[in-house]
Length: 64
Figure 1: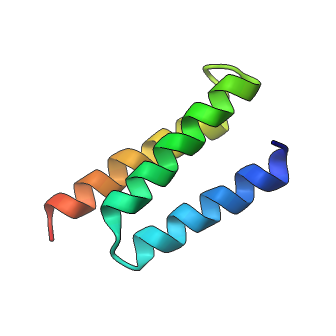
Figure 2: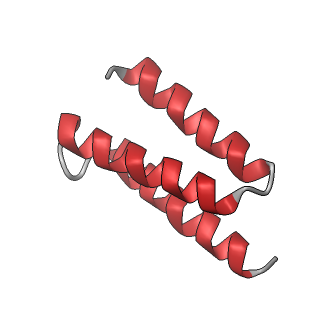
């Protein structure tokens, strides 16, 4: 997994979120965060961004 893969997967999760599929988006963000941590370390900013995406998707799902 390289930076291009991370960006592509982040965009896929964001698109899923924009389409209102919040649970699926949260799962995509969570898996991406775990994969980034495994490859680049626990505190890689991209992993933190992905986990923020999880939280955002969960919050949005609670308000709809």
